[in-house]
Image (cartoon, rainbow, N blue to C red):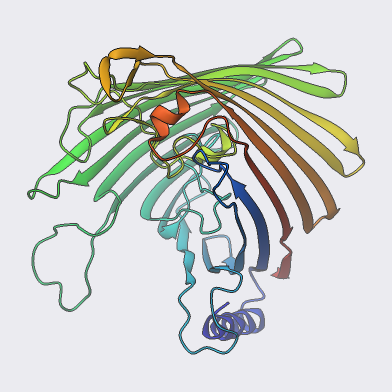
Length: 430
């Protein structure tokens, strides 16, 4: 981590621990290196293409101070690939930044507001997630008004953001937003209610994208409902999202996502069967019918090899063709402190696919089957180890939607190892 950030953090921590013992000061750190062997990760490989291997590390240091009326938190992070800087250096090209820096004020036991740089992680992180799998995570510069009633198990969050580039004092006119792949403005309302054996949430989200060709802003709306509960020994859940408005190019949007699952306990092992249907755009469509999960933690849902919706395009003729994912998931307890996760995904396209050299020639919709295995071991309450292996058994049509040189018959696999040190220390609590 950047030495200056360490010095600043240590100074702040010492000051807080000596002056504010009447509140609760929490200090924490995370050191999380992850080694990856990539041979067909995100896209198909070829037999004559060399695999990639690297170690990426996230290092975080945070301090949080909390009293009855307010709370502040600062979370600093450094993200780097081992060996990306010289051992003796003055300039560091890796990423060192502020992941979180926010303040929260409590009006009363029910109402509060939160402002600053923060993660937004709601429900199952399908649409708004902190992207914790990625070393850098995802942060928003935002403002929240929060309501929570513990007696009725009801929550309401109303949030918004306005993004701009440039530097003060040179910023004297205009608000044209360019150079950043982000929304210009964003607002959302989230409601959540819990019952004895069920819980439900609803989301209304609006994001405005700067149209780069002119000064207009395209507004896209997403409406979502989701819920889960238990019926006898069966746990069921589902969600539905609809998107309308315009995308960042000014094209009309009409898209949806539908998901459902059921989990049954077979002895000590839960078995989950479910599906995700993410709408796509066909050659005949005049609207953008491709649902965009936008700010979700997509690595969690559509296979760990990130072929879909995780910084890797899939589709034809600049159209995202969507995804139908039928999945089977389970978790085996292998010891007192260990478990094995086993997931299988069967992927296909919800819209017709075509031969790129002959648009009249239809191709099969089956894309492939992915198997994900993850071994989890708790070495200590603050130290966890993970080992993963994934393999994509790609169909021929996977070559059509990935649009990169690659062979569906090649061995497409991914191996990773991660260890997470994440201790938290409470210094004052009075």
